[in-house]
Length: 431
Image: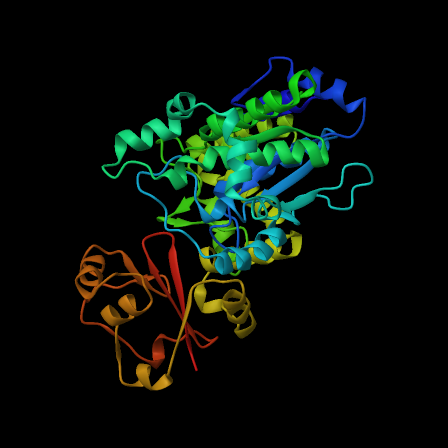
């Protein structure tokens, strides 16, 4: 058993409830199968890269002989964890949450082995036990084991009460009891002895550890382990691309955009991200990092990171298609684009707008084109972009704010490639 050691070597370990956790887990494993779990609240029908650290925790647990259990919070998702929030989250309907569960399961099935011969992964919905429990039963069997003073001392609760004028509702205040009971039920039903979560979940995790030990006494050998909250070198929370979440399913974030997200990793972050998010040997990462430092303009490390992550999440074939699409858009002459290449780019999720041919024949003002394709938020911004030399048509800078696009702007493949800055491309097709 080397779960803690593995996580530490990759920079994925923050703290745990026992300094000899690996040894204790190994001792328990010798007496029969044991499990580890992480929770995922269904706030959408998918998961994003911000959830990926918890998924990695379960992947490493399975590699170390623990059965990974993903708890989808069908019940707790109706309430919302106050941690990290300054205002109460909008409550979701049961129907909405139910609709999210299937999508989350499809994501998790990409990463966890549900057919492992000894430790097959399991997905459970905490609505199965919390939904069947009456308020009287919950207060009697769970609530009596908690002290309000200790609950108020939790970092997530205290921070919320100090930061928000509205305080904290009893609904959210009770969240830690519900999560604690999840741990107890998983311990009883599946011999789950370890809860894994982000460092902001420490209080909730320890509430579960305390509950199991209070109810089960000395036989309640359960533990908690947290993983760091990932930020970039400037301290920004990891997982956003221009303010938008980067999702693990192609219907929400295209494979092309997913690949580009990793390819745009800053030099200061790329070696750490290779350790954190990939399963590449550390020796290989060190060698690539050294190569990158010698010639950062080649972006060798970023290309490796983007390839590894895209293949892991979307598969090798989709990854190769994203790489080909990127090379088409960012390298070579757009005049060489073929009809097949344009179709492939659109299929890969390269941002695409289709316009009538009559629009070009009438002369399509380039300012309007920039706004229509989302490269500028308004005409004033589009004009400034042109005046600053930041708007391109088929990789040629536009210098005239009054310029218009006609049929002659079409490449041989019947498309126009617009670009703002170095990275933001948009494909225009004619129907």
